[in-house]
Image (cartoon, rainbow, N blue to C red; front, side, top):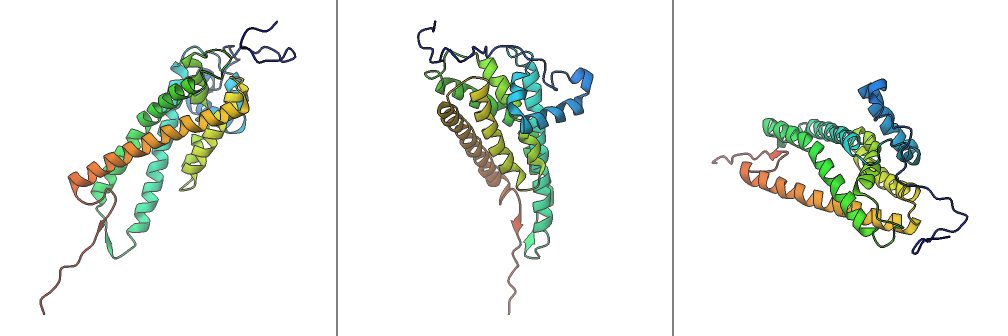
Length: 240
């Protein structure tokens, strides 16, 4: 017998989305080692995101997922530092450019440090927005902690961000696709709902982050004069 509002067919087995799994590598970091568990979880998120999402041992608490998300934020900070360093060494070869090296280093360090809390804030924003978007489509109201946990472990493809230049957009796309996949497999959402709601939630998170970044960048430029990155070299005209 089906409950009111339950669209599952009688042949479809009931799967409790709040069920506990065996354990993700990150939850078992005490036995695996911190670095090994983190890398294994990232690789699992890239290769087998559905399997990783069903392995969460404590879906009702967010402590482990938060620490993993902060680790992924560190990856994004390192990726930003790598790309900024490569960009800087390319630009200083141009004789027409006079780089402000000290200011550039300070800016890069600040952006690297801010990557950790920024990723966590975006994760919370995407989680809350996604939960509201699926409220009318889901079979029951999922706890926020559950959605937060499965989306946090979807950040495993952040490891790809370490690839210079192409890694960042590749990681963003891979993470979004992973979120769509686990929304369907773990939360049992219809494919159309999983795709649309994930794209809206992730897109909104990215737009807000980009807008905030450029607002801070503009303020930095106004305070210190010129851009955050490089200052064009201008020659002083001489009298004939």
